[in-house]
Each structure stands twice: as structure tokens, then as C-alpha cells.
Length: 112
Length: 114
Picture 1 (cartoon, rainbow over the protein chains, first blue to last red):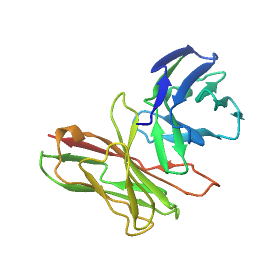
Picture 2: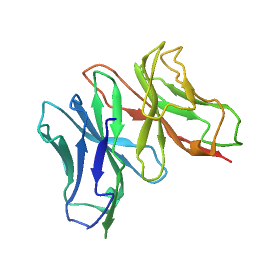
Picture 3: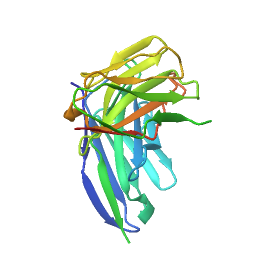
């Protein structure tokens, strides 16, 4: 079946450094790629998303890049802060089948 | 707006019991879905619906039933609970139009099956 691979599973960075999380998807029909942040005991919340007709999108310290040919997309967080510590999930969505597939998550720890 | 609401927040069941997890949204979203979240496995899609009267299976549908009689409600039924169904369950909703696919999640239901 279709899947989304996400790496790394854990990531520790010093405050102020950058963090990069990478995902690879298998469904070539996917056309929407969201990133969710989940704090401990809370629900996932969307932090940024990108559509298949766009290569890069930025929102302040967060950016997402998409390489459709390689079926890769990545989350970039610059100038990390302790409040960025959470689990991050990538996902792919096919608007033809309405199916979301999530990656297995990355636990980011920002060390003060 | 209350957004997406789920009840109960916590539930303990014995093996073989049945129950219904409730999910409701007040944003007039066409698309609703159920996920289970297990450690190290991310969010896995159980069932989803693109509108009232329409449901379809996701990645892990076995042991679960859904129905969508109204736009607002999307209950998830566990027919005969098993320990393997111990998990955190999230309901989510979104518009199904090209203008926005952003999913809004409910607070979750933590289910333990003994």
C-alpha cells in the first residue's frame, strides 16, 4: 500500500540552530502535503502546508520544500526555540481518493 | 465555534465490549475522518467520509464501523473491543474543496481495552 517515510525519528538541536525533517511519499497522485505539530497530550495542529504545484513555501521561521520528481518534501525550522520542542508529522493527501497518509513522526528536542 | 469535539475523553473497556466514540464539528466541513495514534506509528486512517451518507475505509478499518447521517456527526463504533484497539483516537474534519484541505483535529479519546 501507499506510505510516507519520515526521518529522523528523533532530533535534538541546540537553541538557535536549524532543524530539518524529511519525508518521502509513494503515492504519485498526492497533491497536498501538510505538516502538523503535536505537543505532549495535545491534538495535532497544522503549522504549514504545500501543494504539488509549488516548490517552496515559507512562514516566518518555518519553510517547506517539495521535490515532486523525487517524491520528497522537507520541513525546515530556523532559529529554533524551546517551544518548538514537540512531535512533528508530515502527511500526503490525494484529493482524488481523499486519503491522508501520515508519516511516523519526529520528536524534536530543542536544548536551551 | 466549538470546532471538532470528541466524547468521551477517556474510556476503559473489557475485551468483547462494544462502544461508540462520538465526533461532531460545527464548521460545516464535508470531510471527516478517524485516526488512531499508537507510539512510533504516527496517525493511521481508520475510516473517512466525504459527506453525509458516504463513508469509505482507510488503512486500518477492521474492527470498526462508521456512519454519516448528518454533516455534523461522524461516530466510530467498536464492535467487539480487543486489546489491540488500545490507542488514542482522533477525529478530524476539513473542507473537501480545492480551496482548503486543512484538517482540524478533535482533542482525542484515550481508549484502554483490558
